[in-house]
Length: 184
Ligand code: IMP
Ligand code: MG
Image (cartoon, rainbow, N blue to C red; front, side, top):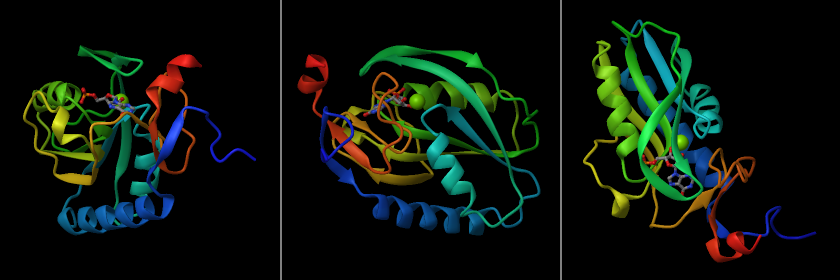
């Protein structure tokens, strides 16, 4: 059997076990920080955050609800520098403790823009949670309150992250060989 189900995978950056451990730690921290909250909402950005949010929510031992927004920001591996709301969240977040959850912070434009938009909707509080961060790529300054891992400037797939919709099903985070990807 081939080592990876996609030929464009270069190597594993973060193992399934490492992710599991870190997600449990984040869940424990959030459980502690929000123990007095009566309206905790995990708000995920589709589709990249789906695997992360479903694992994370099961490590948070508090009453909570989950909602999603769908945002377009990328074609392939290049930042387009703007985002579009394809589908908005259903919850009226006024008065809620919102944790905005995304798979990865790259330039930061997505989180920066969504955060501004959500702030206008007057949540009781708003924090940012991301599985991955590429600090070398930031173009705007954003605080990440709950971060899984910092990674180098490489394109990655797995655990919900994709390249042109491929690779989301991998249980680990893997670096993509972009040259091999372009060759098909
Ligand atoms: P930003 O607006 O530049 O921070 O981009 C964030 C979004 O770009 C993420 O939610 C991902 O959908 C996508 N993205 C950025 N880097 C990667 C990557 O290495 N792999 C997969 N998706 C990525
Ligand atoms: Mg995304």
